[in-house]
Length: 471
Image (tube, rainbow, N blue to C red):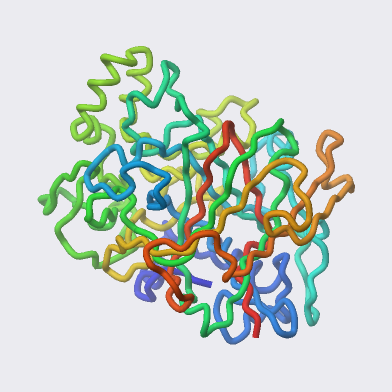
């Protein structure tokens, strides 16, 4: 499993009381993944390779769903579908960005959260391993709880750093949701798929339309080199490089953000006190600073959308984090989908005051565009793209679906509707498009996942989301 924390940082964290809960939570997560998660691991041994787990005698799975906070806000895919995707310091790059939230769930149910609001939906209830069928393993205990990666997409909600005044209506919603997009991305531990024998992308997907009407859309997977430059200005935005303790700011403003001129020397907050000063999001600015840098946007809102000026000006970048478990903010009747709306936001996400009871949900990594932590900003777009149309009543043989499971058991049924799971197996060589001149599978350091074409909110609940290595 990729931890992305330097040894020195971990040692420092273990000596700070404020990070003790993180270490405990990390141990729990590692224990469950290594020895008792839905994919079996005989004897709790991860084998000879981190992040890899044997599921058959000649295959192994490389987890994509853990650790949950390794997934970060995606850069704009430069596929020709989104205008200004290759433009620098141009707000138009983000004009179609909607809101997305991604998180992992297993058996972690926070205290103080109403059971009815938590479990009375297919997209928030507990998922048991029996729903996805048995695994072919060599023995060992299997946790009955599946740790799913959940991607909640809100095509009508303005995404972070979207300053398109003409693209929002008088209620602050995006006017063309079917044209919107949003996504997440992560670095990969294994980049040479040819050498390591990675041949498949595999996952189970809970039918996204069990509780809604027709809402077809498209899921895209990108493998290869994808840009780390989320705020496209050619500079690395990284919270740990922001000034602290009144030190003079050695940096400058771009069209998007305040960025430091210093090289990155750490990817973890030094102390909780510095985190309170640096946890400002990718733009490196608090709300007051955003009001200055994005003054032109706020003026246009005041002139053309005055009814929502107070709403927009409270958080001009629309990047403020809000805990799903903040009972002072959320009404008691708010369902889980509503509560996660602000979870993936980058300002204030590392110091959740509710972390003591909900530590599994907290984002521990400082937000940084350099997601592979190599000290450089990857700006190249050269990747294979896999297109997966999603609609109701999909069939085996369609869109890489190899199996369908319907579970009518009590634990898998909500309001009389049984669970319906689709298993996707996508051969790495069966891509739909190759962008940026890519022509081999020996250098695929990133994965990007994004959604578009949906007209209303949709949640993709993915179980056993893995790369499959065939030996």
